[in-house]
Amino acid sequence: MRRLTEFWRRYRRNVLAVLAFGVLLVVAAMAVFADLLYPQGPWEMVTRPFLWPGDRSQHLLGSDMLGRDVMAGIVHGSRVSLLIGVVATAVAFIIGTLVGATAGYFRGWVDDVLMRFTEIFQTIPPFMFLIVLVAIFKPSVTTITLAIGIVSWPTLARLVRSEFLTLRERDFVQAGFVIGMSNTRIILTQILPNALPPVIVTSSVIVATAIINESALSFLGLGDPNLMSWGTMIGAGRQVLRNAWYLTALPGIAILLTVLALNIAGDGLNDALNPRLKSG
Amino acid sequence: MMSYIARRLLQAVPAVFGIIIINFFVLHLAPGDAADVLAGEAGAANEAYMKQLRETFGLDQPLYVQLYEYVANILQLNLGYSFRHNMAVADLIAERLPATLWLMLSAVFLAVGLGILLGVTSARFVNTIVDRIASVLALLCYSTPVFWIGLMMIVLFSVELGWLPSGGFETIGADFTGLDRVLDVLWHTLMPALALSLFYLAVYARLMRASMLEVYRLDFVTTAHAKGLSPARVAFKHVLRNALLPVVTMAGLHLGGMLGGAVVVEVVFSWPGIGRLAFDAIFQRDFNLVLSILVLSSVLVIVINLAVDLLYAWLDPRIEIR
Image (cartoon, rainbow over all chains, first blue to last red; front, side):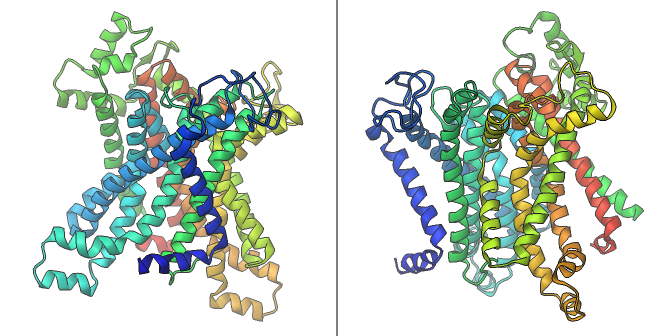
């Protein structure tokens, strides 16, 4: 708890980062309370089509070509974006940590083989790989989340590896060897906790990228057909871009704000977690 | 130098094999027979096509024979035939590739050029209001989904203002020749290239700022200032040149990501490149074409990275020693 207050004290210094944290809280609240705020769901036709934002006070952001409330779509869409963003990052985190920790800890040929493998994954254009995976395995929340995780792990693997390479040489880890701790125990209790801060910072950026990737997939029509996502709304709005551009603009602003907040919060986390490495 | 080239070429070989093998497994892990996946369930899956696919890829053989056949076929650029387009896949890709390369080249040019400009400005006026505005601008570009900003640009510049064409590679039916045609293509390239470049522009601006600030601290810059050179001259003649390397390195590394972004941009701006080809192929369930594009674009990334590496070794002799 003391460490948490200390962390918050440092994080608080960056006004922009606090603001970003606030935006993320609002988005998270929208995701959690979506069913309470708009119990009829995002697909319900509630009014006449093509109401512009501000036309009627009960539908603040207007309605789409079928008379569905745009605000309801954005609130329910936050659920899809956050869920897929966070879970995909968790998948990337697990793969990346396993590969990176093994490579950085055991070094030698294990490191060589694993890093060649990682490089191959880095060479394949990530978004192209993503659409191929999702198209072949059929779009659903599960396949989309796994596929985004699969294209996102290499960055984390490289980062974890480099952290492990340096931490392994530190005295407290060497002491672990001397008292005969097992490899697994040294990895899990000695090195990993110390390697985490930069990994957490990078993870926040990966969540942001995952959200953009999910929305791009949905925009292309490769999203989960049963879910209303911000990308789906943009894809639908594109059909009427010339007459009702607000249908494209509004969900895009939701994505932009969320991603911007994640990136700024990531910078703030970086400054708070690594006080010695003040950036800029 | 020759041994360096040879070593880098040798390193590229396992990567190419690795990519082909990953592709092979994606194909085989997919639900159903690989022939079904390649042909697609809907439409063109007639018996003759299925038979041809099974023969081309040796799908009735054991898995390791299939893998061998698959690798051998791809290495000979024997990628099969697309019935949807009535063309050999290799020819189809070759026909569409130049448009994508042109789009990426223009985007790299814009991203590096504008990114450097923004980064240099930030570094020269570090911690002032100019620096702040440049940072916020970079952060905005960094966080904007490329397909969305593309659509918003169409709304503003094509629909509302009517300045720029909303899509396509050139004006269809205009039959421009010579310089008129070049200008027409450039006119059509501007928006898609700018949309594609924004994210990278932001990355390079941040990188350039950090790199410039680092070089500013070095002794020879102090010397240059002491000699009485103007701040602008120091910034551009002394600091900029030495701060460029990280940006060029990153630009090389980003090409793969940019190819992915090109898919979305090509769809938004109806650009006739391989990204749009891949997108159409997915909805026509022509997976052989899709996978071929994936393999070839990965190999393209390797080739470009190799070329960039060799370029450095030539530009900066110190690199060869590593």
